[in-house]
Length: 165
Image (cartoon, rainbow, N blue to C red):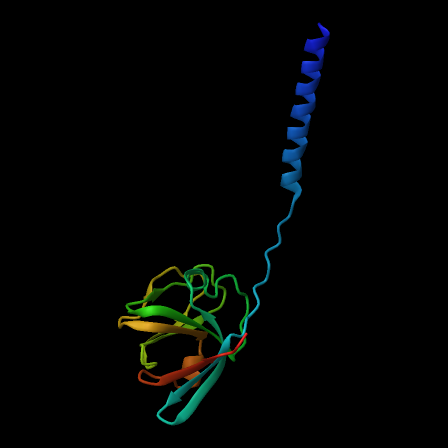
């Protein structure tokens, strides 16, 4: 074999070895998911006439990414925590529970802040559509069972205040 051919063969062997070992390294990496923590963006109160029914610390989802992700991948939520979805306009809404570990009560709210409909006890990982059936601008997600515990009803109102950053 000529010296040029020998060095070419050697280079090819080294290149294939590097590719082989690089590929094997990828298989050994373990990716650990990052736990998503609750982020307090404000406070929300639920009222019936002048009576306070409940108060929640809220995380606000007001852009497309946050509204699409919502509470997905979260493994826990305290009873005093909720997520408030804010949409640009009032329209028919529909949610589902894909990649959601926590059972939820989903509360649909119109642009005046009045509750218009509910989806109670939405089950984790259920991809069935959970529609508002009435146009809504806001959607509030709380732990399943809390709507019943606080006796939250259609026509009750919300008031929320964002916490300054």
